[in-house]
Image (cartoon, rainbow, N blue to C red; front, side, top):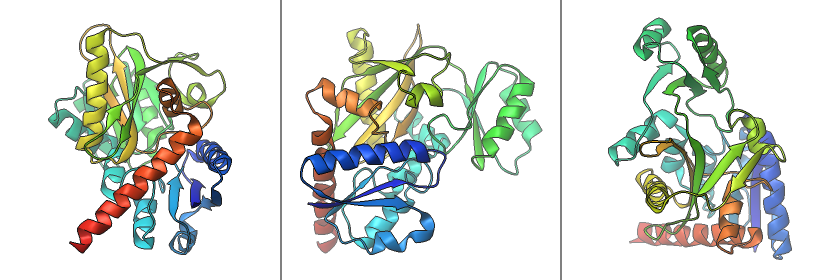
Length: 315
C-alpha cells in the first residue's frame, strides 16, 4: 500500500513524535509498503488535502495532532487514518472534560479544580483548600510537559504559571501515591480488548518526561503483578474509558493504583507513543503482536472504519 506517515508537528511533544514517526516508517517499509513521510505543520495544511495515499498513520502527539485538528483535515481529504475521530480526539485531549465522562461511567477519578485563563486565581486556590501535595498540569498537554508536583501554596502558584505557558487551561489535581500503570486497548468498535496491564517503575522520583522517553528512564513490567480483581478492574475500565470517549482503533489509558482502594484513572491517550521505548508496543508484544504487525493492524482498523462510515453516509 501507499501510506502517509504524519509525524513531527509543533507541540511540546515534537521530539517524541519524530521518534514515533521514524519507528512507524521503518516498520511499514519492512513490510513492503510505500511510505510518504510528512513532517506536519498546520501552516502547510494543503499537504494533507493533496495527499494521494490509501491510508495515513498519525504518529503526532499533543496539539495539532492528537486534538482532532489533523483528523478533520484527513476527513476532508477522504483518507482513512489511524486512531480516533475528530470528536473523540478533542475530548480525550481535554483532561478536565474527559474526567467528567469517566466519572459518569463509574470510573474513579482524582479530585480536581480547573483554572482557565482569565479566572480569579485567588478564588481557585482558595477552592483547592490547601491540600498538598497536589499535581498542577496543563489541561491539554501530554508527556508531562508543564507538570509540577506542588508541595505548598508557593509551588502551586508557580506551577499554575508554568502550566499556563503551555495551555489556556490548568488542572490542579489531588496527588495520589500509588503504582503507575497503563492499559493498551485495541480493536474495532464494540470488539475492543484490553492488552496486558503494564506497570511503570520510573528511575526518577516521578514519572516525568525523562522517565518516559530516555533509554532506561523507566522499567516496564508486563504483565503487571496485581491480584486478579485489580487486573480485571484496570482492563475493564480501560475499555470503558475508550468507549465512553468514542475512541476508535486503539488507545492507552493511564491509572494510579493506590495501596488501598480502587485504581484512579489519569487520562486516555488516543495516539500513544510508538517509539522503541513506548508502552503500547510492549503490551502488544506480550500477546504475540510484533511492532510491524501492530502498525498494520492500526491501518486495517482505520480502513475498516472508513469503509463502514462511508457506507453509513450513503445509506
